[in-house]
Length: 624
Image (cartoon, rainbow, N blue to C red; front, side, top):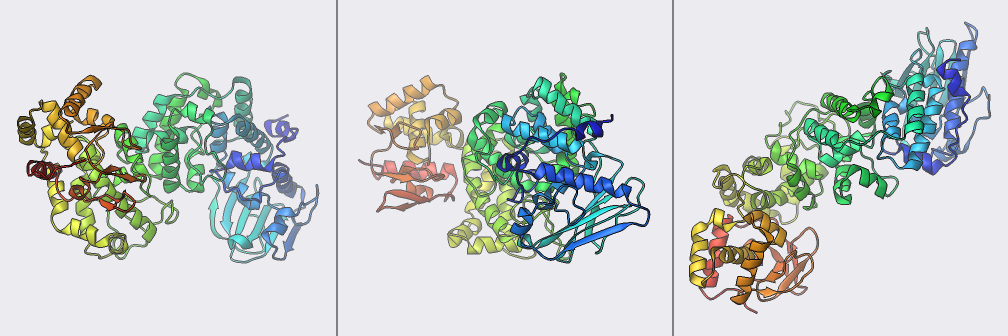
């Protein structure tokens, strides 16, 4: 008995439609057309395909149905052995797995798949191994139809199906050519037909993997392999881990996207994984996900459980990613983590790429619009600045303007994202002139966006040039921060220490609290390379001098504050003392005591530190 015949004796135990859809989410669309009997339906279609080989040389049958509503088609079940109209289950979407079922196999073997979904995936793979869809002797093609009639046609050469989906305004086409056949009969010529790839996923491989998972459990997770994949692809570490785990993003049909067990295996925080999910949804559509992971499993599935198995898997995924998406620079891990907190509309990785790849190839006027994944469309990836729609353009403009202050103030000299700031703001300034796409889209996003006059003034009045020049000139030693006044304005620190009778550390901390929008304890220690003890000593000195007050305030991340009123803020805006808000260009609602906007610094930090200190010297400093 061969592998296919052996698999046919297995009766699928999946009877929960919700569980089936959850197990497949992110790999194929899972609308309500997936029902509890979908596995039986797929097996029935497989038998219908196989039975075509028993027809006589001249026999042919064609069955047509009038247009039906999607709900009627989803509810109707063809009886066992019915030679009439055969329904394609799951609104026909399961056919996208033909030749690419390796993606689901990876998910089934991954330790970051919750047990109930693993069980369903294993049942699916076991069922699939017993159908002709896993048999490399058959040839399969997918496409679409211009008509609105559903049909199935069968001859000794093979079988074709047409499925009209009124709700989706499309008609799907699926064709199975029998071994040795030349082409299946069809009452209508299909459009955009593609041959289904036959790679990993023979009946023997599928049944072997199912057996191994049930005997040994999932393969052992290797966090280092995820890091390797991140560096090879430009994906963030959490996104690379999701891909390595066979869960390359989804539009989140079922929540939670990941449960506690899955997050623990991957080793990342919920917010980091949510950002990674958005990152992958931006880059990949369902077809991309399946194609990416279709052939990455080893020829012998047992190799996954061998030492170095996950590392080899990461290497193969990296190669597949390079062919499909291309390689991109990756931000330092700490930089990516910090960028998540900015809460921009575009994913954190895409934000970093705007600075890591600031050139961005402009689209030629005579070029056809590039297609892409994510909100703007589907298809090949493009450079981060090559926006293809107004939604994307607005996200890019908002991200660059929010990111420039963060990159300038909160990243160390030498960080590749910070080093890309001058070219990124220059690229945005070029867009203010309009021109061809994508500049025209970026220009529209600028002039129609919120605070458009402030943004345009900031880009054109020399402010952004001064900030960019500070970065481009290499004014700071590598590893130092602009938010440390000892690095950017050492003479000012000395003057403040002498005037106030403070140590250098206390004067440094005072200037930071005096000006910076969010001088959190963690931030101050990072910028200044201070230990907690050194920070505590400087804080005590400021308290003894009566220059600050001690308190606990929501989202402040510190206990020392300037005397005077306080402005709260909603994420991602920073709460701050009211006195410093005008210096920083932050907008306030004084009635509610709330920060309502902050993204554009009105000058460089050395200039702003100097102005804040001038006000203190002039008797206009903060007061209770």
